[in-house]
Image 1 (tube, rainbow, N blue to C red):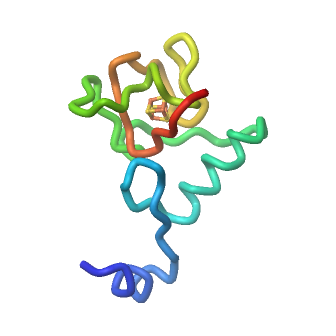
Image 2: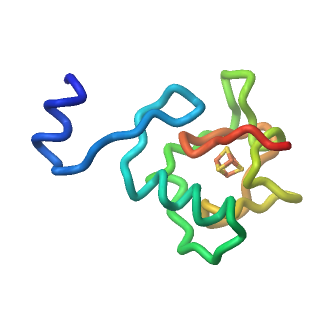
Length: 91
Ligand code: SF4
């Protein structure tokens, strides 16, 4: 499906995150709020597309939002070797 088609169907303009994955505006806003240190309402693992074992070089342990088994964006405990589509490079 093309991006214009997605926009027409949802009314949202998808944004491309650093992962190369298309994120919705609300997902991008979630990342931006957390990056600014603002309190966010976490999403479920399912909604984030979380997997326990990353098949990519991107992993929770290298994500901006990871800290000691917890994620600022995703509910519950996350694995340092896991991954989700909200991944963003940590500093
Ligand atoms: S990749 Fe980042 S945002 Fe996704 S679950 Fe892991 S720590 Fe959270």
